[in-house]
Amino acid sequence: MTLGRVISIANQKGGVGKTTTAVNLAACLALAGEKILIIDTDPQGNSTSGLGISAEEGLYEVYAGKISIAEAVKQTQIENLFLVPSSVDLLGVEIELIDRDDRERVLLGRLEGVREEFRYIFIDCPPSLGLLTLNALVASDSVMVPVQCEYYALEGLSMLTKTLRLVRSSFNPALDIEGILLTMYDRRNTLSRQVAEELRKHFGRKVYNTVIPRNVTLAEAPSHGKPVLLYDARSKGAQSYLSLAKEILSENGVRQGA
Image (cartoon, rainbow, N blue to C red; front, side):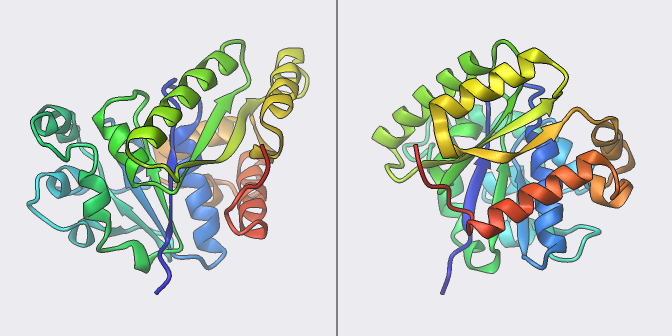
């Protein structure tokens, strides 16, 4: 039995492209024939709405023990792409977990029932480092970090790497950085190029070759409840996520190097 690879998509900074990456990378991998699950662990539910899903039951009910994670899985409009939806009820999870001895490992336990069903399980994390994100990191094999090409990018990444060290030392010693993804990249912008160079210097081959450009189509697609590949497959945004999916598949989802 082969277990699916669990990858959190995380960065405590908001607006860096976590949900955009979760939805569009997952869609590209699914269209390539891989069976993919997204777990939306952000109470804002952007992955859920971005895939056109409206569900009465989802991750909150899984945390609460009302349903199994298998019962929460919903089929999306793309074959091979499935979602565990989020809702605003998730805001209460951190309060409800606080007195549990195993509060950091609840999602890890819940995932046991579905890991063999999927090639990749992507967890779309909220822009914070609270218990929802901690549960995701403890349950994951690795973390994919979208980084916006802006002045504070390296500072935010430094904070996240410190958090990962703490998670490794206390809960999940095998947790690795899957890859660092440059988002909102503008090749005409000197700052974008400088941030890219600095990240490659510090993290080497952990930085994906593929970069995600600033692209209005990526911003428009979620309002239609579709991944960009279904909204406008010829757009630069769609083509960049197809390129990222190919890069991940060619390396079997495991990054080597620094």
